[in-house]
Image (cartoon, rainbow, N blue to C red; front, side):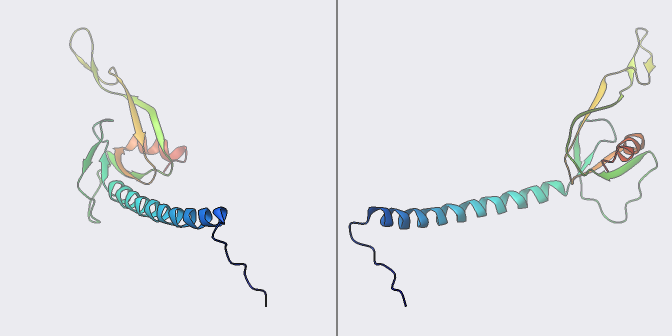
Length: 134
């Protein structure tokens, strides 16, 4: 059997290696705890429903129960990839006479995060489903 060489008292490299190994193990443990906390936070945040039924200003609502009946006008969806600043449709606006004109307002922009639930107008659901995002 081969004996492992003993480190000499003057072995600076060996001592530094032991010291750095211990420090790295402690750092790795801290990073794992931070990552675990972030994953728990993300899971809690992604479980909230984002209500886009009245336009793109997100309003987190109460948790969705299994007995909710969704009206035909809106659909609850889960997006499979992040989408930033997607343009879809226009808000209602007013003309120079002060009359309400459908689709004459501001362009609507939407932000979606993967894995999160959103309540969206049915037309937006159809568009996202057609291009493969839900």
